[in-house]
Image: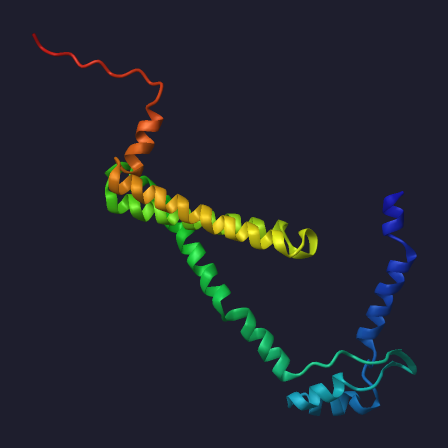
Amino acid sequence: MILEKVISGNIFRKVRQLESLAKTNVFSNSCKPPQFARSLTSLSGINRCLNSNAIYNGGNRFLTKFPKVTAGALQQSRNAATTGDHVRLWVIERVVSVALPIIIPAALIMENSILDAVMSILVVMHAHWGLEAVIVDYARPIVVGPVLPKVLHIALILLSAGTLAGLLVLIHNGPGVSTAVKNFWAIGKPKEKTTTPS
């Protein structure tokens, strides 16, 4: 039943129309194939043909106007996609994600305060970016209003700063993060008996 609605004659009719457009001259009289081939040598010729008043299929007018496309708009969208702070942040996020599986075992094995600090910073950064993505995706101003996303972002910044400060205090004044993790894993395990020679 559902398949019959999806595969209807209307869909096939539209596909046939597209096929006929591909086979026939779809440009207006000012952009006939010989003139169109010559006009393709420059960007202004392409814009003139694409921005003509109407497109004809044989003698039937089927589209009154294409959207205007300019070289400046194409260059601007291409530059926005490949440059800017978002690209740099994405690269940093990937570097942090790749470094975590290396730093965490190294810090747990060596129990070094420098490795503990690097591990703490990377884990907090990774968690902050992940929670920020959740807030951006699910607490959109259009859905929850303009105030709640700002409050959530401020709360996330405070949570991340507090977490990092706590971990750095644990490294500086306590046993260190990796030692604390190992001690936490050891909770509930029977302690090994040490035998003293008599």
